[in-house]
Image 1 (cartoon, helix red, strand yellow):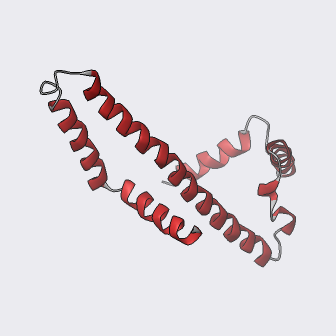
Image 2: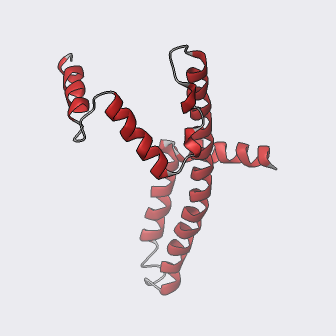
Length: 135
């Protein structure tokens, strides 16, 4: 069941991001809008588009979340492997994605202090300015 859902989610996520899918969606909306006078702008006519878009949105939320969860897990595994492989990296950071938001924020603040980062992000701004000045 999981592999089938993953394959289905991948297919839908891939299809949803294509220009053709957007064109089809626009065409459906255009056809619906043009059909308004035929159906005398009735409540049923309005309900058709409202129901259709609600159903598509509802289902897409789950499919997009599934894709994002898999992408995040794969990305995290790759980062963990880099931390494990680099001798100078601190492997204590492996698995920190399981910490609470507060714990991660505390860790981020400690790292900024360790690197001399100012609370207002001054060092980050300076490094970004240096990087941008190269181009």
